[in-house]
Image (cartoon, rainbow, N blue to C red; front, side, top):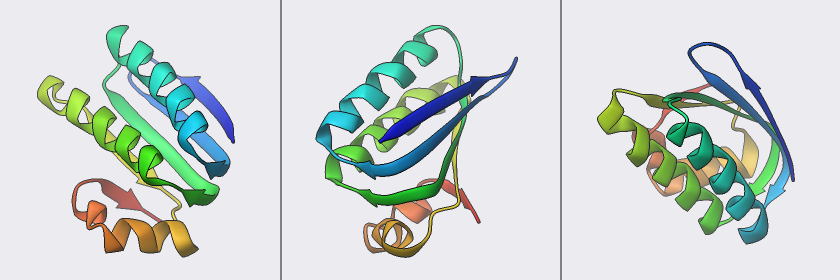
Length: 101
């Protein structure tokens, strides 16, 4: 999995590509938690090129959301399609996150 982060004054744009398994989820968690500890609370996570996310990957996204909500932050997911989009719908996480095409 490729993880690219672009940081602006107010938000962090995270672009993911490939498949997210437990090892990748741990790396993503470490990166994003570090950014939250640095004061960032607005995240846009681009899923356009993600073809699979396992439960640990979903868990990381939920953990990030739970961490930023009390700080009046948000996590927006963009570009989920195919199996990934279906996974968010089946788990009803599409109701938890702001999701954009």
